[in-house]
Amino acid sequence: MSRLKTPLIVQILVFLIPLNIYVIGNRWGTGIQWALFQYQHTVLGNSLNLVSDNIIIVLTGIIASERTAISLSLWVVGVLLFSIATIILILANIEGEISLVRKASLFTITGGLVLLISLIFQYGIGLNGPSGFAIPVGIPVVLIIGWWMYLFPDEDAIIEDADEDGPNDSKSNVSE
Image 1: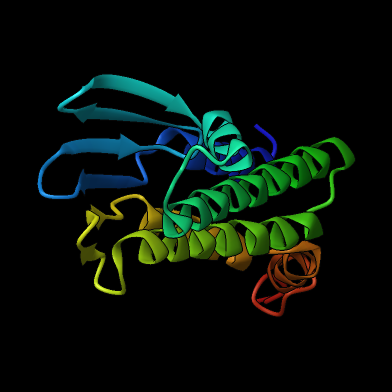
Image 2 (image 1 turned 30 degrees about the horizontal axis):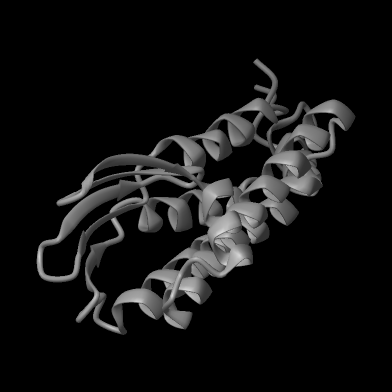
């Protein structure tokens, strides 16, 4: 497997892990939210909402609360940043450019922070308020993934390692 496939596979995990578990209001409902969709159980029934549904809800003005509309909009921005990071990593694999991994990591980290800001905007600084509470279970994982990709060695580090361990190394040229 190519060295560049690992960051791409790890980036795809960002879309697969649950990012947020939440409770609406005074236990009116609960839900689990991934990057691209959320499953919600309320007193009115169960629903599966795609991120595209959030875009439509905001654009049509169905949401009465400005705070919720801004929160949903921020979530969409975070997902777009994850998507950009994924596209950059696909390009890195196609072109064989290790340096693109660090650029993608910045989009992943920023996307994770935007999602956290989205939750803070909806539920308050303590992620607990009148509109319910949230537990951002996957967002720390996203930030760790982004940080790991940021630290992913670039071409210069690989060349330096090869020079240190190569045949010109003083340890390998010891003659008796």
